[in-house]
Image 1 (cartoon, rainbow, N blue to C red):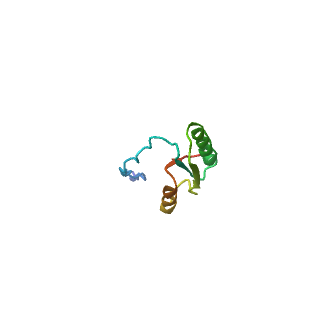
Image 2 (cartoon, one colour):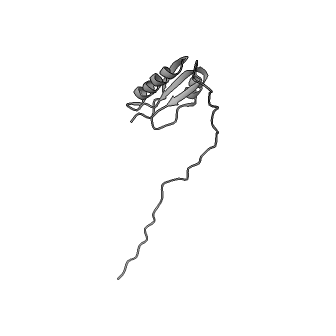
Image 3 (cartoon, rainbow, N blue to C red):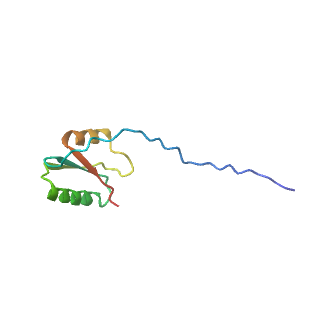
Length: 98
């Protein structure tokens, strides 16, 4: 006696959707610019961003920094976090710190 059974295989991956937002205009210089440092809560994100800021400050007369940690590496930054940093800075650098 033969028993046949079928196995149904499901693929849990979805099709990514990519929104084309365009790029923000690039500044001609960072002289006088306030730089946003957007970390993602991972261990080395903040030290990495600080090191990048230090290198930039050797090359440009920066107008200061605003450091923000979005608080969750697995999710996008909350809109209010992005709105807040966007209103205070000229450019933003973000990093993953693993």
